[in-house]
Length: 572
Image 1: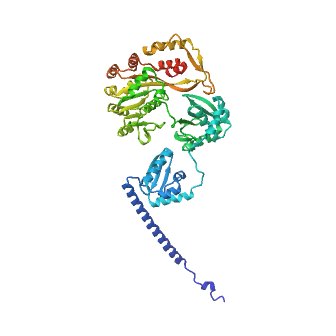
Image 2 (image 1 turned 135 degrees about the horizontal axis):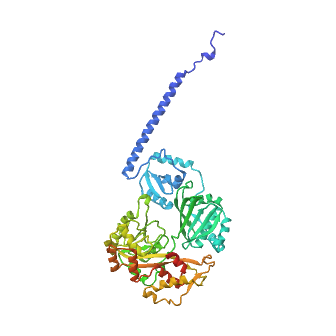
Image 3 (image 1 turned 30 degrees about the horizontal axis):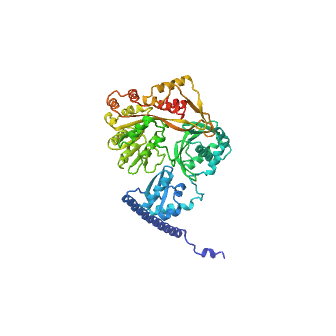
């Protein structure tokens, strides 16, 4: 039996070599098919690239492009499939869309996304292959509850905090007894109640300092535990569409606050400091009525003089003062006076803080090379009657503004100097030609803001003999037209004692104090001479009857509007 082969040996097994040959053939065929498929895809991509060139749009192959979940969520899947457009790149500054075609629908979608997120948008042409690859990513997108950038604060919540908060000192306990989410609601609600323009939240060594800027002055309102800092900053950044993981660079964002009757914009700025990021929230009352020309606080000859210059069809009106002196408010008040049917007004601002119906407002963007000078050139091609330029910072902007004022446009702008008399030397130091400046300049406004005495707790006060002497000296040098209305022998001064109406501060609201001069022949001769100085200009314009800011402030003190301390605080 051992001489016969076993049955298992008689069965023919396939050789290893034969198996290997068949596998090689299959692999070769698969590789060939894949290669042909890649060639076909490459051809389609090439055609798409040529198509993008013909449409004057950039092309991008998204085959291996990383797309974030934030980008996918920018356009819901059903809309993306219907419109054949996707978002493949999304940051607080920039949004990029990919589409098969250039269409009005895609352009409108890009515009709406940019407006909603306050970001720059761009459209790219992509292929069907890229589109399908991005569509597949929607399946792996985590399901989350929709997040809104808006802070929904009800009127009931605001009324609740307004009833409970009677003064600044009582705020700290309220802050310590609420959650992180409610802290933000409390913070904004009480800031609105107190007419605060800015909320400062600053990390310090021992805790978190919360401060409100009320009528231009910062007030400490609370000191929170340090442990709450990271959660609070993360919540603010989330709402303002800022990058949560970046803590070593400044960031800027915006939040829309929705109320039942209106909405507010809050501009958020973060800045890295030694103990953590500093957060400042500026409340922009974009829906507010705004100050009118008659409410500015102008009086007497200054009021009439400026009114005449504003009604002229051409020339320049310049407002000057430090940051926070109310220059933009004055410009807007003048624009409201000029905003009539049949007049085209265009502005160039940085940023656009208050939106005005009937006015074309444009915001400069240095990051995209859209500066005041470049924007002004484009602005003038819009055939405006009146232009407002947020600030004249350089020679190019100054020269274009002056040329525009000389060619039939009324130009409004601001410049940084300490007084009205410093404007002309500032222009000349930039390199402006004197023979162009003198015929272009209509009026110059120097201004500061002083706090108003609270009318509910106003009472008479006594001032020191030294302060009284300073007041009398200012009154003695008043122009005769103003001096005859003042009884220097019977002077009364007032202040606010503090009450619930003004949150214990003694002040509520602000008003401007001004000095205004207009161009005349004597001033023109000084400009054309080689000996232009701020002192010489100040001497001439006061001799010609200009009321200085300090004098205007003292007159408002005698009218029970503000205090002597306020006037000297901003003018000395």
